[in-house]
Image 1 (tube, rainbow, N blue to C red):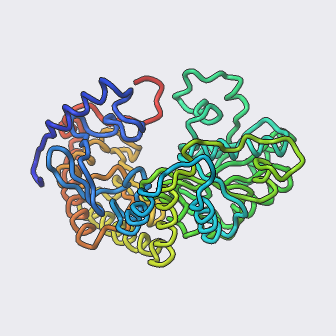
Image 2 (image 1 turned 60 degrees about the vertical axis):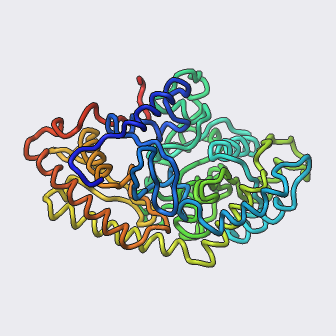
Image 3 (image 1 turned 90 degrees about the vertical axis):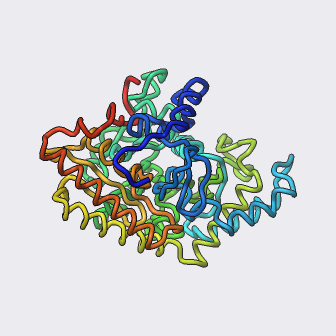
Length: 441
């Protein structure tokens, strides 16, 4: 497949069929074909380990698998076996299954900073439950979100702050305020400006940069001083930073935290965890007003909880987090060296923790560029690398990394040509890729 141009005729037809039936052509905006070069959005047939095959018969080394959820690789044997054991035993009952007991025990043993946990199916439900709980226990209306982090929930309290705010009343959005990551003074100013109104501070504890020294502890102290709830969104950092997430790595305990993505290795499971006195407000053993915390028909479906237990066990027993970091470090070094050798080291920039690498494509003026991202993605696809990011899975091996670096080097040679020409258009093959959050289609 390593050739100058290639096409995906069957994938193109399947994408047209999807658009005819599914708004946006995908069930997740980040998986839309607008995120890929025109005509080169593969429709996947199947995956195994670190590889996926499209319906046109092409094989790819895959990064960012399942939007970071498949961190052990596709069809991981320990996960599949755990799921298979449950399939013949039924999946959902009128009362809790014993699997719910075992899964909660396993989660709380792995994330010992939490005292109670409730499972759901997606991250948005968990983060919105955290917000509702924070409002209930504080009696305050406002939510303070970190404005430097791209996504927290599909629900109105967050989506109303993005360019895709159509259909969301301003009165709802007005209750959400933002604070900058890493700036304690600005956050305290916000809390003083809205004194007694902010129910919670919600943020990803770390992303593409490490938290400044003392920052997370400083947030903990601010939340305590101003009487608001500190919520860590650990959808990405959970397991990838440490088995217990960023809170386990940095030693700062939030009041509430949310987990998902890697937790199920592709199976649908998320979690809201936190302090007993807060979480119990959604239960039966307290004297206050009841909080409708999380109540979902499929939240405790057994084979997803079995998958989560297998994932947690595999991470602990096989040292998966360390492996993710080692693979990411090898990949980052290779990509940076290849970019530098081709003279584009200042334009193709790898960022982030080794277990969660992303890349930026910068133009002649070193500004973020969707056209240059399009050029780069097009060359990666032609070389058999499907990489909206460089987020690794533990199923990758050294040969996969080495091949990826070779393809990156070839892509960087074309990148250099475009920079020299001052215009990437001849190498795009159509319209540029687009950002997910934009006002118009």
